Image (cartoon, rainbow over all chains, first blue to last red; front, side):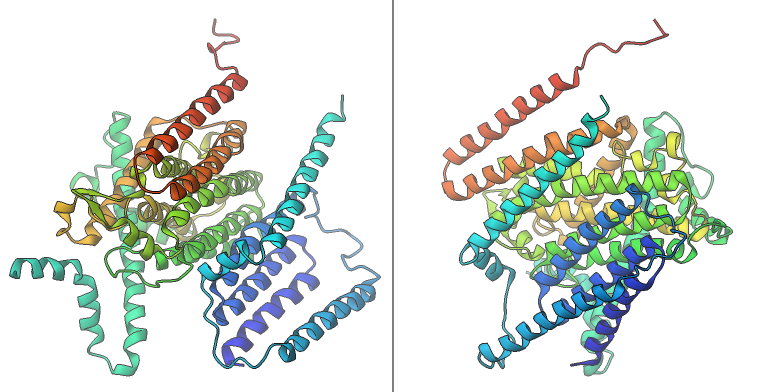
Amino acid sequence: MTPVFYLLAALTLAGGLAAVLLKHLVHCALAVTVAFAGLALLFLQLDAQFAGFAQILVYIGAVAILIVFAILLTRGSELPKDGVFSRTWFVGLVIAAGVFAVLGWAVLESVSAIPEQSAVPQVTVHDIGVALVGRYVLPLEIVALLLTAATIGAVIVAMHEKVRPK
Amino acid sequence: MAASSFFVDLDQIFIILRDWIVGFLPVALRPAAGVVLSVIAIVAVFPGLFALTTVFERKGLARIQNRLGPNRVGPFGFFQPIADGIKSLTKEDIVPFSANAAVHFLAPLVLVVTVFMGFAVLPMGRNMVLVDMDAGLLFFFAMGAATELSVFMAGWSSRNKYSLLGAMRAVAQMISYEVVLLLSSVAVVMISGSLSLPKIVAAQNQYTGWFPHWYIFTPWGLAGFIMYAIAATAETNRSPFDLPEGESELVAGYHTEYSGFKFALFFLGEYLAMFSISGLGTTLFLGGWSAPLSLLTWVPSWIWFFGKMMMSIFVFIWMRGTLPRLRQDQLMNFAWKFALPFTLLNLMVTALWRFMGEGWARWVVCTAILAVAYVVMARVGSREEHFGRRSYRYAE
């Protein structure tokens, strides 16, 4: 736990909190981007270059842009008059706490499941590639199939809108 | 013998210079000082090139359009960038009343910072790379993706319909062509087996007889390079893909509401993006800093890198003076219906090239597949577009 870690953690948390607490939707989207960037830097601080850069490429380059596009195309960038905070925020809090508890439990369990590793593992992009098309090829293909299905679904949804006004 | 060592020294002159300066400092500070010096060099050299390029571009465009171009400041107008720089520094910085001030302020900074980061992984000569990352190519594209956000921030925060339209066009275009850009680079990664840019250059820095092993001299490399060049032009919003800044429709696109130094930063960011994407294309397909003939390896490596990069910039300017602007639907159709399928096919062909082994058979097979696919796709695509004699409504 170095000072760098605390700085990055503070940045990420600030971004995440701002994303929830800010009133303007586009500001929230930009704050989420800050949180994504903080996470990417955390990966880099752990010497996980591939994960860090993939995080930037996918989350800042694609997901954040997608969120912003969705906000603009749905006219959601105008401020609603009766506030932006849902009345059932505590349900969200409970769900978030539940997810966090499960994740934390899984991480803490994995510490005892994997024997002590003193040295920092040297994982190159090459190793990740070999693992992806070797040992983890089935999950990779399943994800690819899922994404293709999602893309086709999105196209069908978009096409339906176009055909309607005949 | 003395002559050859002189050329070796000239090749490494910047490294030697850096080590000499760093040598004056205490040992503990040396690594950090070396990095700082390299960063200063990058931050000084590329804006200098930017200033040169603006005047060359204006002169070149003027030559294409049969004009004189800037010719008042200094000899042949070559001090024009200095005048432009002073002008943009002294102009009033206008922020629109209803603009989102914080985002409006951050957008040009995010653009310039992320574009500068891309230079960190480009090998600009033998041993001349700031950070030799294992995932250098991925880093470059990650930084490129972050610039898209700054374009959106600029367009949205200005609260101007032209800015917003320009930003939406720019982001849509950049997302579409980024896929092509990435996939055409993946072909190089498949052959060289590395995401590290110095390793990719090293793989191309070999010679058969006189001729180098640049990837552009293979069928898949040529196809990949053409796709890369098209996508790079679109990614940097250059003509003929300059719809986001189409001045006849959108004033100036996403930086309409910027003035003074912030506008200059956008201008700088766009040109730096051009430099970095040309530098990456040079590294991936044109052999980076390696010499074009084995006879010429004595010429310092950085001359080759910067020479190839400036040649690409020249082609950018040439295209800007020659080609008309595309329409939005043509742009999107071209990206998704031609460029993307062709790049995917090129990936298959690259895999075939990789596994067919040495010999002439793979040259014939790969060239044939790509040529047939190109012709068929172009024919089918142009049939759908109904090209024919242009019809006028009132003029005939």
